[in-house]
Length: 322
Length: 128
Image 1 (spheres, rainbow over the protein chains, first blue to last red):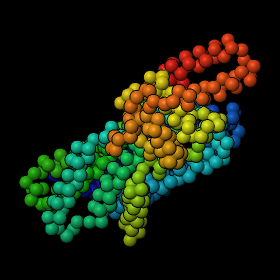
Image 2: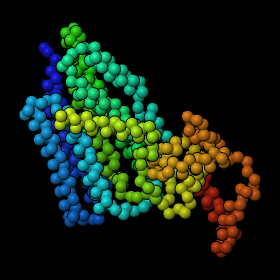
Image 3: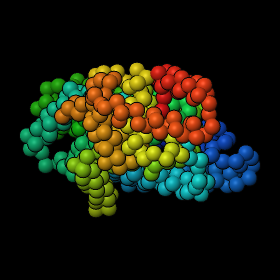
């Protein structure tokens, strides 16, 4: 039996993404502004009875944005599939993820400006514990990941095929490179803790950090296996010799993709439980200016992040509209 | 272990950080050999300027509470500061005692307040 083709793999991945997003919309996203109870909207403290009055309009606006965003992805994926351009599906997902994050960030900022303009100023607690990269990132595993990427590129470059879509592979590798940057940002970023129930807030913050690092780790491995499977497919001698290898690599890629989604959902559920009765970030102000991720990282990192994000954006736009 | 910074405190931020760390050392929460988070981390977590935290750490270093080792960060060295002149050490205490006398407190009340505050400082994490 032949290993699944690239189109079958893309079809399966797209189906996985659509199912997970639908599940997420119904289960988590739809009532996300209410996750801390009826006293809060998107983390901003609101007066009692808010949801009987203006709160209903706020909630409906949020839900309308969610529906619109999901429709955008649905239309984009539907068009790509109708045109039999399966190669566009990962690009649609990548571009949509950027659009989604940007829209929700703008909506959150707008909410804080309108509903939480003058939050109460409270004492701030600072954890005197160092957050070292090594406590969160396994460097041997990172090295193994980059070695696998190097092997994949060596296989691709030595295959001598003309049908290889180099731009897509560059997009993939650029994305993987940026995921390490994302992990560093997740470790470095923090927010001031409130002085009451500080230990619980601290545990929540650490659990949040570890959950998303775990998800990004699995996502990185998923992309590395996708790259390896593409490299193996183009290396004819290897593909003929070891058909089982193709099955193994593609199966592993799909399993990793599935576990990434599963871990994200499990993490969201656990974090929601943990933070249900904790005062959400943004519902209090600090005597200082807002905590900034940019202070916690070096100038070299800032430049690298800006370059990475800029190039990623250009690649997505170029691949979508060329 | 947490350091609490008050919103309405009149002391500058660097002083609050220095005093807070000193009281954690006095309370036994921060023991010898414990590494403090980097200047960058503290500044980012609090949303203050890097120099503010650097000044606080430098003050702790000058007073002999921490040693800054290249690559290892600021490490708590001792519970006792470098030897200082007792007159210099008692000066702030005299200022506070004067204020308490002027506020009309009796000798007995002042003694009681000093004992209470001392107990708070020695209590784990209770000092600021």
